[in-house]
Image 1 (cartoon, rainbow, N blue to C red):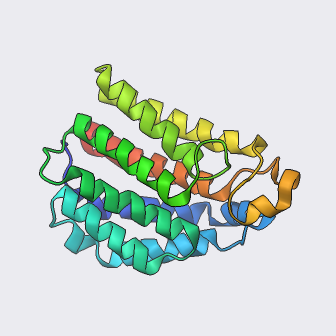
Image 2: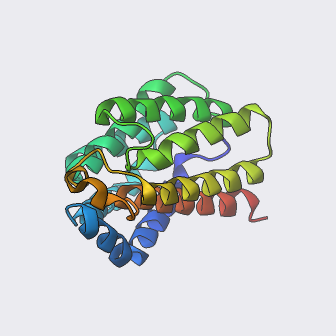
Length: 214
């Protein structure tokens, strides 16, 4: 990839600021159909990543992803902690001994999202973060394979994430506490899908500045 983990402190700061800016709204979403602690759990993980960001910046991508996954596993509670830890640990596993460019990242990210599906025993259409992660992984892989330019790929990724998040509004929840509400879960955006979308947008924003600032 044209980017190195030295960008990680900037990435994590951007994600942290984005989640903080939307914390109240996301908590309201979570309180409507969930436990209400999703943002709190995420912020604990982000704080752990900020504390270790300088160390992570000195690693190569596979080792950086492994360290991120382990930090998330030890600091983030709830289902999101386990699932995001799985995502990053799988990125590490799938990317070892590979040259990490855009094409290989698209491939290993898709495999990592598959690992999250297996870990959570969930898929698209069940009102979870996977309604964002799965279509984003598919979009990224298809656009890279089609040879599209990076700006177009990044914009399409953000559009896909936003569409996936919004699609959860009319879904019936079948996982987690929201599933106990039955049809009353319909009409609410899933908090995990919303934070996944926000974090993807934050990451894309940093990448755009890093690659296209000049």
